[in-house]
Picture 1 (cartoon, rainbow, N blue to C red):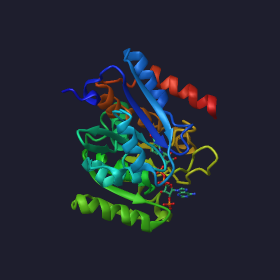
Picture 2: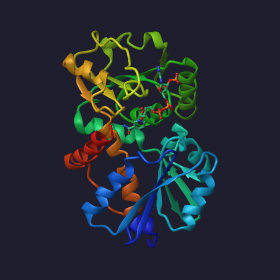
Picture 3: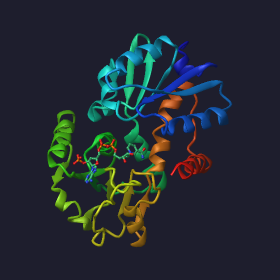
Length: 292
Ligand SMILES: NC(=O)c1ccc[n+]([C@@H]2O[C@H](COP(=O)([O-])OP(=O)(O)OC[C@H]3O[C@@H](n4cnc5c(N)ncnc54)[C@H](OP(=O)(O)O)[C@@H]3O)[C@@H](O)[C@H]2O)c1
C-alpha cells in the first residue's frame, strides 16, 4: 500500500516517451486532470531515440517516476522491455502505458479500451445485438483495437489492409492467443464490399489525416443504422466522417479515443479516477486548432 504509483502520493511523476515528442497531447490531458483534481504531481515528456527505450525505462525508475506513456515509434520496443504485460498488450504486441511495481516493469495497451469506452459512451446500444465490424487498416492501432472489441458482443470482424500480408499476420497473431476469434480478411479492393450488414466500420489507417489523401470508400450501401468511426483526429471531421454525416449515418471521431485511453494510466500513477468531460474535450480541441 506504500507504492506511490497506487496511492497518488504527493510528488508522483509520470512521463511520455516518444520521438518526436513535441506534439504529444498526453501532457495536456494529464496536466488538465492534475490541476482539476488539485493533485501535487507532474507529467513530463522525454524524447527517446529508437533502441534506447529499455535503458531509458530503467533510468526513469531510478529517477523515481511512477510510470508513463509510450508513443510512436516506441510502442513495440516498450513491449519488449516489459517484465509483465496485460493480455490485450500481448495481443497488440505493443505497450502505450507502463508502470513500475516492485522490481518489475508492467505494460498495458489502453488504445483499444479507450476506443471502446468512447464508442459505448456515445452509442451505448452499439453491441446490444451481436455486431459485425469492418476494420480498415492493420497497423499498430488496429492491433490495439481488436482484442477489446472481441471482449464485447461481436459476431464477426473483417480486416482490410492495403498490404494483405500485414492483415494476415495480425489475424494470425490474434488467433494464437484467441483461437476462436471470428476474424476474416478482405482484399484492399473489397474494403467497401458487403457494407449492408456492417454495424461498425472503423478507419485505423492514417488516411484522412491532414496532409494525407482521404480514405476512398463508398458508403452508399452501408447499413442505415451503422456507425462509421475514424481514429484519426486531425482534422476532427475527416473526409470519411464527413461522407458518413452527409449520408445521415452515426459517426464517432478519434478525439474521444485519445482522451479515454489516458484514463487507466492516470488512475494507476496518481491514484484517482479522472473524468473525460466536454470541458477537457474543448481544451484539447482548442490546442489541436491552434497547432494545425
Ligand atoms: N485516436 C487515437 O487515440 C489514436 C491512437 C493511435 C493511433 N491513432 C492514429 O491512427 C493512425 C494509424 O496509426 P498506427 O499507429 O496504426 O500507424 P501504423 O502502424 O504506421 O499503420 C498505418 C496503417 O495505415 C495504412 N496506410 C498508411 N498509408 C496508407 C495509404 N496511402 N493507403 C492505404 N493504407 C495506408 C497502413 O497500411 P499498410 O500496412 O499497407 O502500410 C497501416 O494499415 C494514425 O493516423 C494515428 O495518428 C489515433
